[in-house]
Image (cartoon, rainbow, N blue to C red; front, side, top):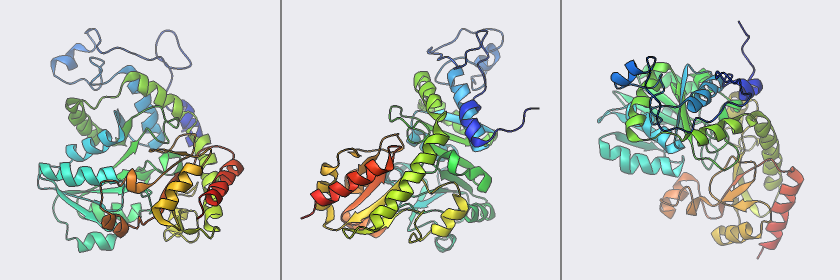
Length: 395
């Protein structure tokens, strides 16, 4: 039996080999909406199933099979499911694994679109939504959560880079007979594997680090076969299918994931240290800094690196932050993250635009807050770009 591959090799070989008669080194794209019924796939079609037989691409597709095998290998999961976006993966998972009356707990300071969906859409279906100040065990205890429920945690928070104590959350959820779902988008499977830390399922916006080239919208969820089959059954009737060409591009991106994350983490650490030394920067949030409140936790849970996202507050408020962004020459102001290029954004007009100023400030997102998604460029070019923008935006 072949030995288990290390993560760096799983990025390259985790999807297995092309099983067609042509033995392509790069598996082909099966750009077909439907497939002819034959003896091998007719029974599942007759039963209205179709996850494990090729029938119709809303159910699955051979290109997705290669990708999902690779995702499962990277996460150390029994099964994985690729979907049309990160929000499709998250929403399908929550809806498939909960019922009206069940509670769902998440951090108020997490990704703004997740919070919006929970408050305005999941809650409208009868889910009891609790957006808490944080996901420390003490906060969960104080919320008085009882009965069936889900804890929805981020490995690294968006945008303030809080690091959740996943082993403690998993233990708490098990004691409550609840499930822990971890959004590990900011960490990627290279930096840690939430399933090994006790999570029931892990989700990603695969548009970000997994793809790594800012040219695909996709999502995924991984875990036990029983849970993934449940999510698949919900997602297929919601039309959350991923296009085969996007799946092929995503798998191509994953092949360089390990190398990209190594450079991104190295660059991020140096830029965080640089920004922390600047008088015009009032605070920097990056788990790799000793000043970060979860630095010790990050060192234990993210030993390969603290990720590629850092946030900081500029003196001069949002006006100064806007000037700063417009003076950057190579770092581009844009939504999203995880690509080879460095991007910067202001949470108040992107990820957390749906919140009032007072709500953002309560989360720690104050005036002049910027989120920097670090890419793979030479770190000295990035540092010089930040330096000249600080000088040019001073007033």
